[in-house]
Length: 131
Image (cartoon, rainbow, N blue to C red; front, side, top):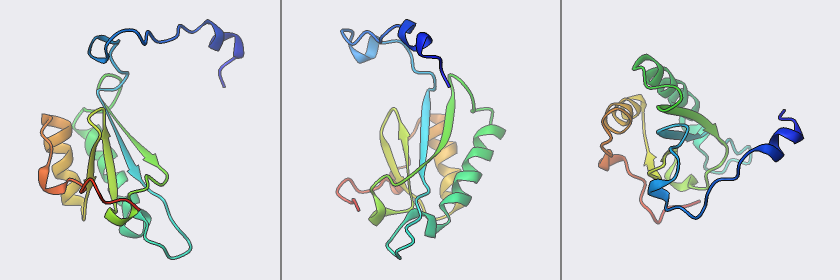
């Protein structure tokens, strides 16, 4: 846990600068996998092997040398409120939402989006689909 006196000494971000000129992010891209499990029987990403997809993505990112500061971070998330499109993941800072079906889709997202910066159009979550 951070000591309170260290928090007080931390410089606040300069919000007067345009986003494009703000200091660079700690990660170039941040991937969040919804792993939420709804015990009530409602639709949820956990029921569609989201944990296996998350594990696979982390392994691919590490083996490709993409993991770490200034590169890519893959994280677990609770409900991202896009249950009807699940399973889903989102890549920031682009805010690109993907719906995937299997590990081959994860392979394609890593190779295309995370390595080459090209969005995988066929896997985009429709913008109107929520919970």
